Amino acid sequence: MPAPALAGGQVSWTYAPSSREASGLLDAGLRLYALSHDLRDGTIRQRGRNNSAGLAQRGQGNLGLVEQRGDGHAATLAQRGDRNAYGLFQFGRGAEDHVVQNGGGSGATVSYGW
Image 1 (cartoon, rainbow, N blue to C red):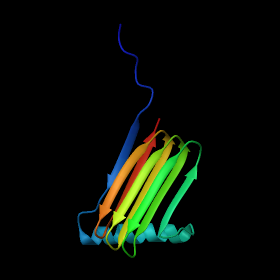
Image 2: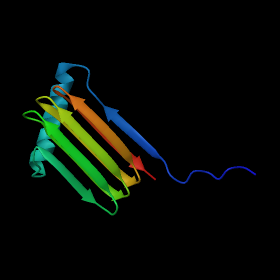
Image 3: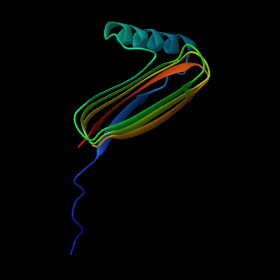
């Protein structure tokens, strides 16, 4: 008898710029997003049920954003060093992402789970 199909899954897109110019543009975009939504240097925003998230920052000038919309998401973002900027955005159900960022740079991950 065949095994049942898996009911859940996830698709993710991660962008980690390789050039200084692209990294600076993403950094500026994340900081403008944070400013326009009245978010602070380290912010977790959750809409839905049974979500869990953690954010740890060591250093100066870091920006860490974790946003979860939907149910059953799990995320962690750890930033070490100065001038990091990262946005971690989860939608749908049951997405799971864990990011470690060291020493100044920018990045973003968008995930959708089902």
